[in-house]
Length: 372
Ligand SMILES: NC(=O)c1ccc[n+]([C@@H]2O[C@H](COP(=O)([O-])OP(=O)(O)OC[C@H]3O[C@@H](n4cnc5c(N)ncnc54)[C@H](O)[C@@H]3O)[C@@H](O)[C@H]2O)c1
Image (cartoon, rainbow, N blue to C red; front, side, top):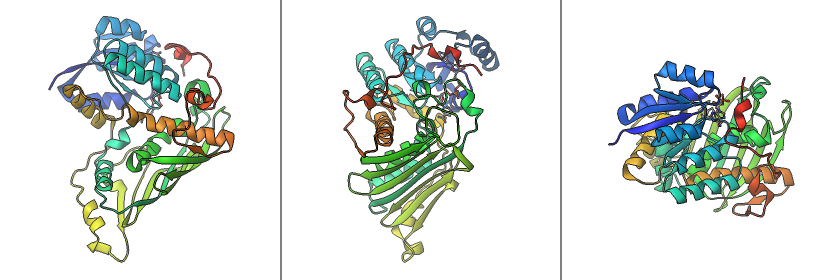
């Protein structure tokens, strides 16, 4: 095992998830630098966590430090240009969700991966808990029968103050509302588990927040084999929950939680007639580990991929699926038509922006005004 030199770009509200992740992998990594356009913030971070060097410009850091892996924890509009800068500088990238603001941006990142031979993994920590990994294996081995019906509900509450942060609530900087930044976790988990979505029909509304983007979205999904799912993403729900329920021929498997889960948040209910004798239930009870889905578990797998020089999880097409789905969901809501998977090509306005309208120009430092 190698020890990799890590740099962090963006030391704002969500940095603790990454600090925990770095602690969790122990001496497999060494944090060598931090960057934030807000000098006071990055200095305070470096002092608190004894990071040897800090910078206010990512290019300066990349030239001076040449890290092996960079964590990008900045607002969404900055992800694509920063990710490409890091890849070009020879680093692998572990970037926060949403990875980028459009399919066009995603494809530019893919081209940078191809040019440089380096890889990027998007943070989707929910895929990495033991229960989700176990369920994925059971589905692949057809232990639960065919998937038929899914409910994927992210019912969270974000007040007006949350949307006062300058990059939130705008198409050009957040690239959507709760669909893009809140429900993206559970939708990614749903589509990763079941895969092969074929068509989406959606509506969105801005009901109770003074924002440009939606504060609620609802979508119906048809999968290639005809199975069906419904999705709700809300920023308006006082009793908050994240609920994913998958009905298979032999059992219902569901998770009820808010931001994190362990095995206790999951339940498998077999067909009544089969009860305790159910093969599906026995398969589910084969879950013998209890690992919480976290940034750290995903980071450990990225480091394994670096050791082997292989594409890490949640990169390439594994990261594109959710970006294409969200683009299609918004296209459906904004055009009033169902959207087929694969139908948004480079000549489609929804390829270039989630709302089908050109974003204002942004540079890697465009979030300089991201102060709170
Ligand atoms: N995976 C998760 O569970 C999870 C949870 C919360 C947030 N996030 C994601 O993390 C990202 C950051 O969210 P946040 O809440 O920490 O935002 P934030 O606004 O609190 O912090 C962002 C930081 O990035 C800095 N920054 C902006 N542009 C920069 C640039 N070009 N170079 C260097 N620094 C720059 C800002 O000064 C700020 O300190 C978002 O993409 C968000 O969606 C993920």
